[in-house]
Amino acid sequence: MGKKKIAFIATGGTIASISGHEGMRPAFTEKEMIELVPELSHIAEIEGKLIMNIDSSNMQPEDWPLIAQKTAQVLENCDGAVISHGTDTL
Image (cartoon, rainbow, N blue to C red; front, side, top):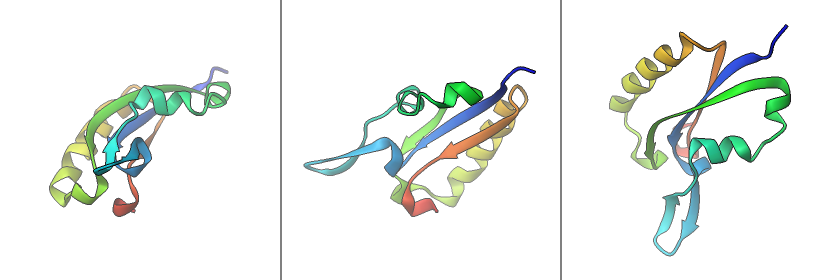
């Protein structure tokens, strides 16, 4: 049996940011974030998808339908998905 195909859906937030002189700023692409955990390739085929790249303190309920819609589209060709974002959206 082949590996499951999992979508890593990036939306920005703390997890994809670094701290600079002006506070947190986006720094990592979805591909770079996947590459930070090379062991993932042993258990699944990971496909990165960037939906948006905003700070979690700027995430609004109006953004949720876009994330849901894009995730549904991605899941048509994947077995599952992980959506990353920041601490303000937990």
